[in-house]
Length: 440
Ligand SMILES: [Zn+2]
Image (cartoon, rainbow, N blue to C red; front, top):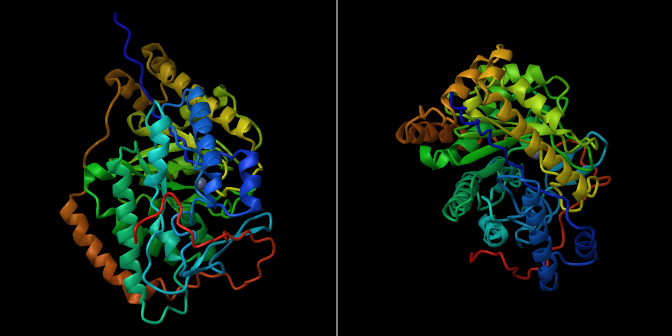
């Protein structure tokens, strides 16, 4: 009897890789946009992609080597109409990070993430993925007291346009996937346990997603995690039951969900099973960047096996729980550790796929009927019961009405404690134009 084709379980990184120490030191000494740093950034990107490919990773990123200073404000860093005293993200170990605040309109990105793709694709031999920041995260830049002559409604419209442009540019340049970083989703529940803030974030992000066709949305994903900075999290104590039902309302085709570091993975998997929609792929985290322990391929394999009890194999993928250094100066994880974890993810995912591809294994693992079905069919595509573009547009317009009437502005989105002990502020604006900037 012919051997069945092994199932391919897709595996993708989240994005960031710790920057080389010499690059961090040079940036810390001066201006991150200094043209003299260009060769250092270029070397870091080339070296990162080379090491990424050496892990066998079928999809790579540029490690966000050039996203100064973090995954969130890279697109607005250096804008003249921002101030450093924006939203504060408090972490469980007591340190904080602070985003920038918009001081006047109009809101425009200073650079789009596709400029990173240009460089990465020059060096990569395998598909490259690109992460972008969510509209909901950037919505926190608009101050609670509002800006004269620039309403929140205008801001939201500009924000959606800029975000949409960024994703479209990345898709057009051939990004394997465009991942929208939505780390503030879980944080929103912590800040506002009523769920009101989270729902307004979901609505806003769906307004953005509704501008894309179902085909485009199959290449768009959303990443959720409890945060990861200096080996600390900001919302790991928030139960996934408070987040995931709303998360799967997002009209995206792919979900990258931190799971390896969860206290109770099966609890999360049960919620995923209940709320995941038929056309939504789930990439579960099988390595934990906050944990210094380097997972073995066997541990990863067991986590895939566990997840396959709850998620159909034909729509299951693996990922890391988060990027390895979402903030560019975070040296809590070394590059060697990051790549060792990635290699474990790649090997463990491949090992599990091979096991599931064997009919004998299917008999042994009778608790996995969906895995066995998938094995018999071979590699499968997802269901295409996507909501029609027209329906989505209509729904988006209705939701938008609610959103821009002000439910965002009435929310207590700023912590009352405005102290800034230990805050690492993304500063360093020089007003100089960098290599990646837009023509606005
Ligand atoms: Zn993350």
